[in-house]
Length: 499
Image 1 (tube, one colour):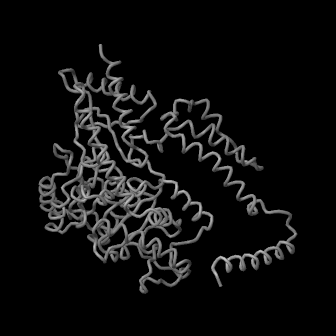
Image 2: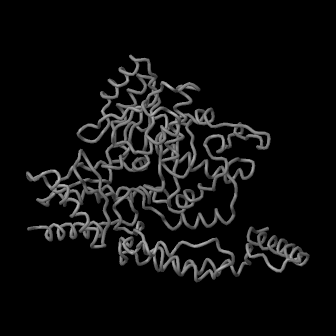
Image 3: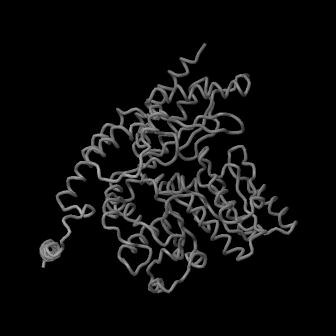
């Protein structure tokens, strides 16, 4: 029987059964179970708001947070609702009154923070996953869906160049992935007694790694934060010296963390050298590639990230450079058995593990037992477009950052502080003999003036005490026209600042 005919047949069967059950039920209605027509009405109402918003992004202001006054926020405080409200009215409030009073992070002009994806196909996948609400923590409840997520993890391992023994899991983002990576390293290298274990990072490593170390129960004093070099990269020789010092005083060095693209400047630590050092010193080598890892899809990224394939564990954020919605992170490891040894826990009420049959048991690989079906939001866009589309968009970002860097260098009043290795560049007002405080004040005024023009939105950081403006090109919607707007606004703002 044809699949469509079969679906219609079973639809009639189950529809008839539902009608019989409904007839036996004396309950007048079930507000939590809308009928098919109402479901379509709700989705259509939402789309009537979403489509105009997404198709006019270039015409919308970048920052509406100024309208979030204390009085407005206080007006939003409300008690627990005791009765229902009109759906369309709620959507009007959300889209007309609430969303505009935020930063427009999905616009192509958003170049502030790393993590501004949200391709529509992933939203469709979430509608499916959340509506069907299938459980994928264990294979027993949905082995086919678990296999889809396992395929996604395998794709990530392949992109990183990890061997067949590799594995991992999807999670909410880099913070949880780094936490699990640190705990896995601690468990494998130190076992139950880790009070003397020491960890090595640079002062440019993302702060969630230091948080992960603390949450993993490792004493704060055991974290070695080493000064980065003049290119804002981890210096392996400084690590080597720190390791020797720690061993000499009876400590147990066990974890070296490299960055595959820092948040501050996009710097990539010398991963090959770090891998050599980790092997020599018997350390677990962990790479935070949350921002930069997926640039390995491109030839330039593969060269820049050389050595990441030698890591014991790698953090990835598909909600950054695969342009997916927030809440999509991943940890992949060189040997999936290390995750099993760290996370596996049994209970009488749990189904028998199917790991021996080759199926993934994600509850045994990660901290989560209850987990959403995250894999669909990766699988659907990848299957729909193929990886080449994502590679092309990442190559475009590499081209765009070089283009805007060259335009910045043409402006006499500006100085590039950190050359881009991936898609981030940091710059500031040039040092012309003014005091550091004066220079920083000028750079602050410059970024405020640019953002006030509402065409683009930049963020800032501090590099060796110098206030720096950051351009982070990560959005799939950012194209050359947005960079040209930025350059025009940059020059106009500098003109307004001139005495």
